[in-house]
Image (cartoon, rainbow, N blue to C red; front, side, top):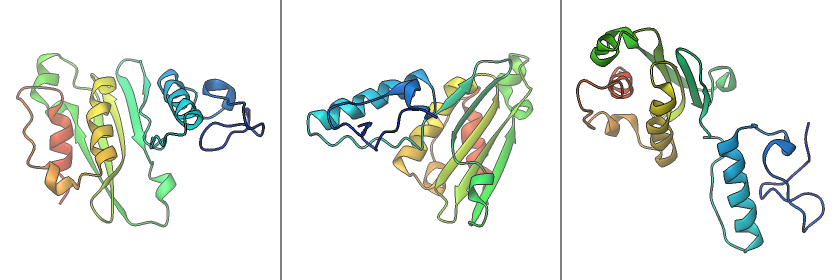
Length: 165
């Protein structure tokens, strides 16, 4: 448990803010940066709308692991669908001999992407495309028409989305 803060990272003392690891909330350097942006925005009386539920998280292992958004466990009792696409079917992954892994996406009842989990080559790079889709709340049926260059690892994102029926 860390220092208690409100949505603007303000502590119980009006002119004292706390950001980053000291809050005990999702301790990632890139999130701490945006905690700071949000706190400064509040101090300057500006409204900065950052969705802290869409912070990508990465484990730099081999293969890499990346995640953003909700998990199936967090959606228990709600209507959602999942789709999974294997890296072994991706041409670029085959060329790089990095076919271990998969991408799994979760969409809500309105076909809006709410979570994604990637284990595989360049997961740390791929998660940003997914985060952008989630941030803009693009319906996956719209996204299916976006063309990915071939052969690229990023095709796993498009192919996973196309797999939703």
